[in-house]
Length: 627
DNA sequence: AAAAAAT
Image 1 (cartoon, chains in turn green, purple):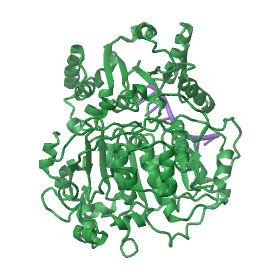
Image 2 (cartoon, chains in turn blue, yellow):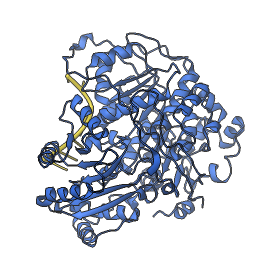
Image 3 (tube, helix red, strand yellow):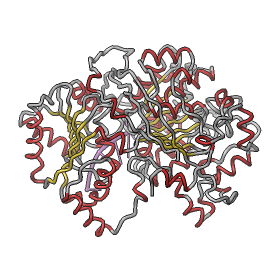
Image 4 (cartoon, helix red, strand yellow):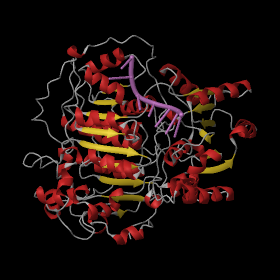
């Protein structure tokens, strides 16, 4: 139906500088519980509920926000809307789907630095043509129209200036779609490969909204950030922080970062100067909140990067604590945005607890964006891995792939394994360095810097480096040990082939990786990669052993390009209270805003037809090639 | 059994 593919060229704004204060291990002052003051929670009743009331009023998607003053708040913690699950009853109710055509893009390939540290990378190898055929999937109610240019978006004078400074000429696909959604104040679940401009996609609207609020944070003992961005690793938090600072340059919007492993006093000192946007890892943030140094009571916007990691078993309790058990405004009276390259069903289900009537957006699924990455899988028994690796590395030396502009990233399973392999490579004359979570933060950052600069063009890493990290010039990702989870594989190989450049990913498959075989085969097929015969055999055997796994329904989670709500019919049938769809029908009526009304009220009527306004049907699902 | 994230 509306499933169209398109031509585009782009390159993301590659972040280069990571100028951070040097970290020194210091003793942190212990704060006994009775001194950990409770912050007062009031004084926000006069605050607008949406970051973007102004925008919301101009758009078709304001309900739930602009109506806040006269309407009850949306369901708290995502449970509220489920209570209304019984309402409605149309076939395919509350489900919608659309795909849109893209224009061609022409983006300056380099991010101009506003700071020191100039790295003379050139875009000569950027493969623009490889970004043809980027499919975009959007589902949700009343979807804002995508923007084709930054002029059209018009984020205001100072932001426009920064966009020019960054040499962003045209928005990337994720930016085209996500920015209007975010500006409309809507909640969002977005799938896109990191390195596709995601950070800018949520930073620009956040900064814009804060400027519109015209209520910048003042210095004080307790920081009241207006926006919170969460990251699963410290390095990624730093990276986002650096980018956000560039975007907020000369806007008077203050950005601060909070992460562990570095002395908290510096971070606290920075907070006291006033914070509008706080970028944080969960642990340190909780620490600061318990010390009553940060209150989330003023949060208007919450963004989670690498959201699927943030909601996995290890992280979920911390996220729930931050989002649901502290003083953060409830779901529905804040704006919430999730970004990730992969979004498994279970995680989508969890995430929907934190979202209110959200839009699902997926840009660039595997068949398109990872054509840039040539994937190879080789059968290598554990015993032979080191020798095999050495041959591989020797083989790429003559090609000049060992130079500054061609880095090799090797993933291993364990921290000990990372150290061991680093040591062994060094012994054999390969300039390698390891990064993992057992190193102190300073070593981690030093390793990353050494790798980025090409001083040690081989980085041996655990999954600490698998997500979000943007290192230009990674030409080769080697999965020395394959991960257990196919999504981790996706994130790992995503460290290469970035910014429109091509990359190579080699995996060493051993007997232990049997459980991964099936998913790996599916992934390779979807990415138009050659599937070794032996791997196919493994996949068949594995699927017999593992028990015919339909664990990942429709294989849909691979590149996240699949709104799990489409499968909700199962739950609707079985249990009306578990329906995620109740909110859509329910919201419109309980808020007294029919679609027609809201369109009329906002003067946006072009969405009500065809490609934008319609609900998605089985027809469109089939047309889009799933099932 | 493993990695990440607070001290």
